[in-house]
Length: 244
Image (tube, rainbow, N blue to C red; front, side):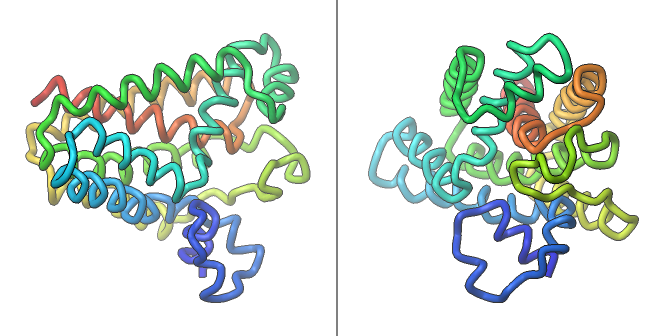
C-alpha cells in the first residue's frame, strides 16, 4: 500500500483508481520515491529513444523533459522555484518559510528555473543511447539522494501547515534498504564503473544542501525535497559529462 501511495503522491497518473489508500500510507511514501523514478525516468528514456527516430535529438530531449513534467505535474520544479525564492529572498527562518509557501513565483525562482532548464538542454552533447541510460539512472539516483532529507532533518513546519497536509516518517531499517536498492540498482546494472564517480558529486551537493537547510530552516520542507532531487540529479549528469 505504501508503494501505491508513492505512485499516487508523486505522479499525476490515475493510480488512485486501483485501490483506496489509507491516509497513513502517505507518511511512508519517501522510501519508495526512487521506485517512482523507475517509471518517470523510464518515460523520459523511452520518449527520447522513440522521438529521436523521427526528429533531431534536441527536440526529442525537450519532449522527454516535457513528458516528465506532465507525469509529475511539475511537482519538483515547483519546489525548486520556491526553494530559490525562499533561500534567495529570505534572511530569517520565518521569512524564508513564508516566501516558500507563497504560491507566486519571484525573481530568484524564475532565474533558477531558467538556469536549470538551460543546463538540462546541454545534455544533448551525449550520444542518444548514453543519454537514455543516464536519465533513467539519474532520475532514480536523484530521488534517492533527496529522500535522505527526512533521515537527517526534522520537518520545518507544523503538519497542518504542510502544503500536502502530511509529514513524512523517518525510514526504518527495511525502508532504508528498499530506498537504497531502488535508487542505486539501475546505475550499477546499466552504467560502466568509470561513471560511478558521478555519485560522489551528487552526495557532496546533498551534504551541502542538508547543512544549508539546517542552518537556515532547522529542518526541511516539501519544496526542499523537490529542489534537492533536481539539483542532485543535475549534478549527477554534469559529473558524467566530465567523466565521459
